[in-house]
Length: 535
Image 1 (cartoon, helix red, strand yellow):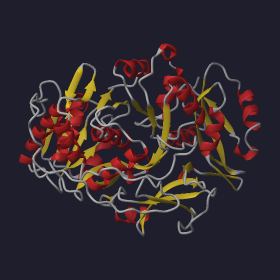
Image 2 (cartoon, one colour):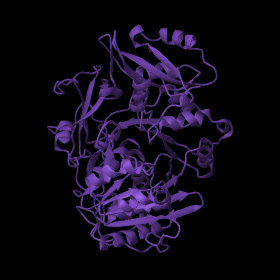
Image 3 (cartoon, one colour):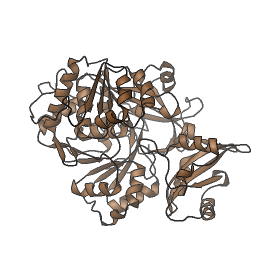
Image 4 (cartoon, helix red, strand yellow):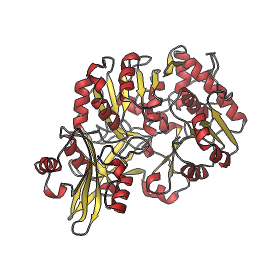
């Protein structure tokens, strides 16, 4: 790695809502992070999946070889390469290879159907598609018809991506420039045309350092277990954090609670990166009673709001701190986090990361800044914010106004600068003229000892305008009247669900969030939840 790797300057933006923490070292790109790790820790485990163990030297050499192959085909700034793979060491190699080639990485959900992929790939106009053999078997016919110049099937028998044993192969120069596009992440596909979020190398690398300011890692020591799919911004950001820390990224191909608990002990996991659904599943797992979680120092929670009771139970059982943060794909993705070494406030998502300003503004105009304790739309600005949506100038102009990213989320800030997320702006339900935030009802439900999970949505109501419908996953038999009485003691009448549906499982999105779009659709179409979900 002959190129000198230096930190890029950053601009400080301070306000009463900023964290005040000093921003640690910022690399020009995540590829520079890998270059550093390969020189400083060539023999250290970079990626672990089952019996497969890949060192930083091997990871850099393998990424270099594939990057050079991609460059020979025309990859570079201004080009995009789609990645359609399940969690694997090969996927980590491909992530860094594509970005080292200078092309923009377009990670996609490998579970998508051909019909779901077609409009995204048409919009992205990719030079190449890199996919694994599982996708090849399932979508062979569709893959052949996708309009792009090159296709790479990765897996057994593939010669285009082979793990190298040598540890002295430099990543191909020049390494990416900070203002080149690094990622194209598609979001919002459940509500209409998927929007491609453009993020630069500067934004992604800076955001990695911003998170490390509030959740400092120990170089060469951390072992991070990532369970959520790497195509998602949360897991991808955690992957970059692992390389930033010169740590070890431990992967699972499929989430099974018992397997997670065994891995924590067997692989001496220090940081668990998970979602609320995963924490709920681990707490319900029989093997938890005998599991050793002594190596854990910290658990990240992301992707969705973590019920307070789940947080308390996991901290009590694991003996490790749970830190909840907030962000979105358009924000690089991290905007806030409860600090690891500092005041943590349960129920909040912490203060803003360094060099980031966040305000609560009125939801109607987005111009009036609200004070502590007032609920409004969250807007943010900082070096990690997206450049815009690909090919969507009107949507970009709506989201980015006067340097601010309008998140579409509702929240509030306290006098210490700690933020609390109330709901999505579009998820707010107006019952008889009152604003109701489904998360508040979900929190009340989660405190019942027999409620494992819940999801609350608004439904049309001829008398009240809207009413609330709640899906509840219960432990054992839970009488509806008993639950209604429980809620009546904790919620004003207009916040109490008009409908309660007891289900065996909640419909989920690909990243484990309750699929409220599907829930609303099913309720609007049939007036009830499909029998396949009912107890």
